[in-house]
Image 1: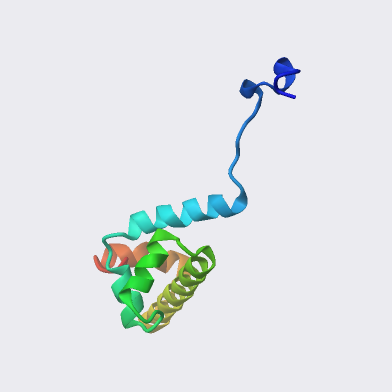
Image 2: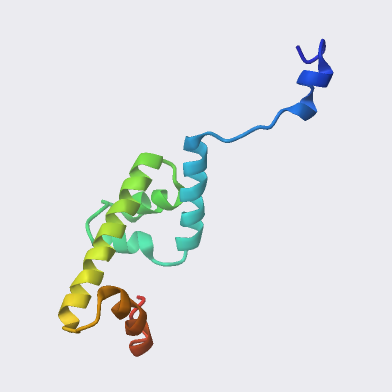
Length: 112
């Protein structure tokens, strides 16, 4: 078709797009680059979420998208749970949204 109708089906008429899986793998790989020096694999290993640090490092490379997605989902749930626990422990009259704005200003380690 390209040789018969180059004005319609020529090489300059096509756009190559990544599929959903490739977009997701690129996202997880980028997240892994951001987390590379953060001791994240060590934390996952010490928390018992993975058996070895090498398995946790594989999440940073996104070699298995389903396991990588699951690991990130578990981490988000745990961090959200810890944030809610810290809010309840503080015993403040502020809403959680207002507290999340004020708390980092009062404590330099809040974001960690």
